[in-house]
Length: 389
Image (cartoon, rainbow, N blue to C red; front, top):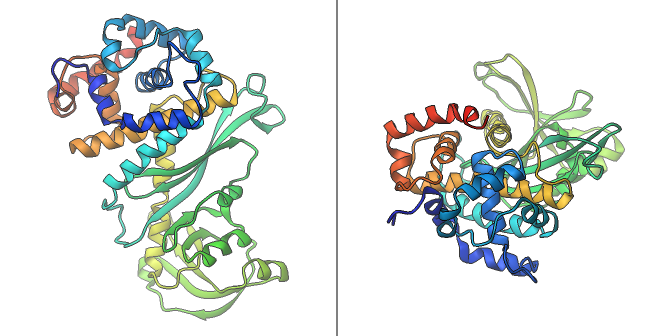
């Protein structure tokens, strides 16, 4: 119910607040805390993500302007950059990672029956990572190269709804293939990944766990053909074969047969060679499933464009992971709002509208569905940088 509440306050109704406290207690987040709770910190960081604040001072100044409205939004503590910096530095990032998983479970249930371009009666996941460059002087723990620091966000995404289902944050040196050691494989699921994850010993675990994978072959890939299947060359297919790996060590890593599919993308003309352990799906479906993997690239592009994860309010590992996990929470929260309210706008448009109207006392459904209001808000949002000068 609206009853004069701000858009921010109404937005927070979509958060299962009763599940936040168990996450806090699990890591003793509020131990000996009197004035600025973990939930206060969480809401301040959500505000910073939605409105793209540039610094802790910027967060402090913006929220103090709205001091009279903060209590009704749920922020009870006094806002100061020192307090917020200390909270980001010391309060366990796993609190916000666990709560993000709560939101992810909710979002995945909402998008469970969405169409992503393929009619498959199984879970389909894409695996990939994105690298965020950092200053080596400020982030010496985030080792990457000799004169450069970075963190990696390794992600497993549910292609239905483009919802990240599992995330690991590491330093920039960790190779993508090590992420497979952390993935909890679901029997019957299909995992789509690029050739950076090509490790046959690890991929054989997919076979043992009764799930399927699709990846690309490397140029020096050696194999022997056991059998060929009929193909439709008009659809872009060039080969569909059952193969066995060459080499003693690689045969020990993956002793079973594999399926090799050659395909030419009709849009780009690029030739691709896929490897999979799935012999039931049509070859063209395998190729199209790999193309759907680009949804995870769009996810990385979205969070870098709309959320604040390329620069950080703190330099410790805890502060960096806290900020990234809260950014993920905002992405999933916006996805939940879109689905719950049945909004036709993209997630980026919704976030722009929320950015400029966060403390307006307007019904949330009205501000997100009224087209004339939206056009005015987006126009104003394009002028927002001028207001910060």
